[in-house]
Image (cartoon, rainbow, N blue to C red; front, side, top):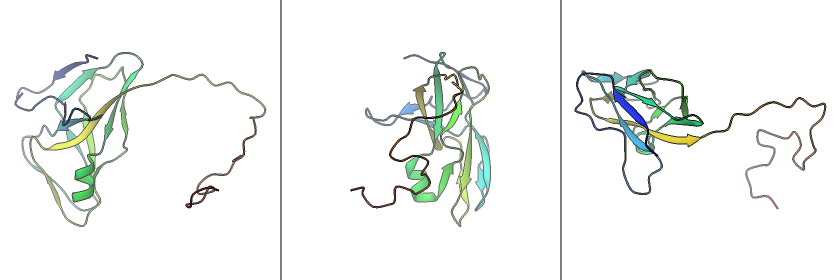
Length: 150
């Protein structure tokens, strides 16, 4: 699938989002900043990517954390997966939150998140008086336990 993408800044030295391996589902996206940004412990910042996209109808772009950044540095893409809707044409920005107890520095060109393109279905609600019964019923939030079901 080909998706239209444009750079919204004059400087275009950063790579376009790309897959790290042939089996990758997500494309790495890079910080398009001119001065480094320090994210203090427990702080959240928006990091620009310098990119805008035009998705086909019925597709979204999900913004997700990079597992290595989360595991090694405690830095997550907040609201992940975030959704870029097919009618949005503004700059893609990544909400990064630092859950570690140390400052984290973002520099130009750092890989800060992953983008996953996914198809979606738009639903219509069918208001009814009752729903079909299931074995689980209304049990939620831990009702199935943490051990394997027997």
